Image 1 (cartoon, rainbow, N blue to C red):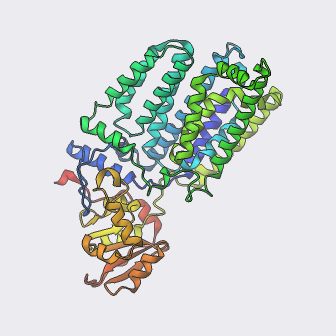
Image 2: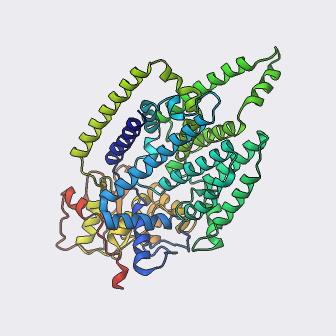
Image 3: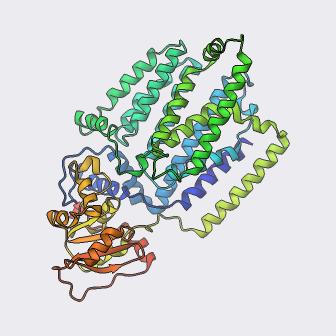
Length: 523
């Protein structure tokens, strides 16, 4: 049945990956960096697309840029989506390998981990759904962080269970790659640190983990930017990012009534784990004094396991971007402790019937999705009509838009139009530039700020009602076109004669979405 499980898992991941085909806001910036490197042999260290004040920056995702651009250039949309499927499947495959590894070294199981209990595909469906909005929504650089985090997790757990520390060489070697692909490499260093503290409390050897930690730290200095790059990475992890929604707490005002699937999943994990600890406490209790019994329970706990779970749980509450790390580690550490007991309520025969039934449903779902939906990334949600108006009418000048759409507009409109900023605001632009953008949207000095920045065009989301009304009422700005979600305003002194009307055919924009005038091979 293990084969049925893995096929079911792959098909379920593939179904969701094909359905979740939105293009990430910063993906366009990744393509610009990748295209520039392959055409010039150089990495960008400045933002040539912005009319706002910029600075020298260090691209901690430059490696991802090369990978994404190469895949898209060689295999197109299908390559990008298939890449996402494979990456996510490998992450969950490593989770199952970790469960099997722990099962093999548990005194409560047989020597063959596959005979102890099959995997419950329903549990993994619930796990995937709990983290769906963070893991599956689009192709992003953090997919690499999930992969390397789980690879390090496997190496660390295998080393301590088997007392064979040779496998730890994987960690500093892969750090060379990880640190040049995504700044999330610090989660790996944090994981090694947690293992060091946990094994110290377990009174087990910690010297290998300390050595690996410092070797991994040194590996970060192997990059094209030098020591300044490492300094920037340390600086980046201390940024609060109050304007970026994914860095806010899952219980912030913005997310209080969202991400319910994860909140319910995490609550159930905490509740069942608490019940498990209470039963273990009662089983280990040796006397009538509470503190003595707690001490006995503490002595019998795996401190590494406890520290990792508690830390990941607290981090997942602090910022929603870290939710998957708790979900992954909780599954690894708790699956056999608690959740396989659900399988025992059914006979092996009924369990097999259940898995085959679920496999059939997943197969039908995948078949339907594959046949009814084009396997391509979707441009929906972007101001593609407004961008096309500027392009076909050859309107040149400075363009202001919400920073989410900055890299898309730069990709599509350079060199005719320069953007104010994009989503890389903390690394590329001068400090305070985002506050200036906010002033334009919500403050009374909005017009003064627009004039100071010499803005010629504004692409505005209609739900920003305050600025939308102000621009409509202002004699210095004209509304030239509007789609369902966006509006394009042009400065009144810019003359428009015999303007061309952009196409309303979404398929046209889908077909042309990767076209750009950024081409260094002709320079």
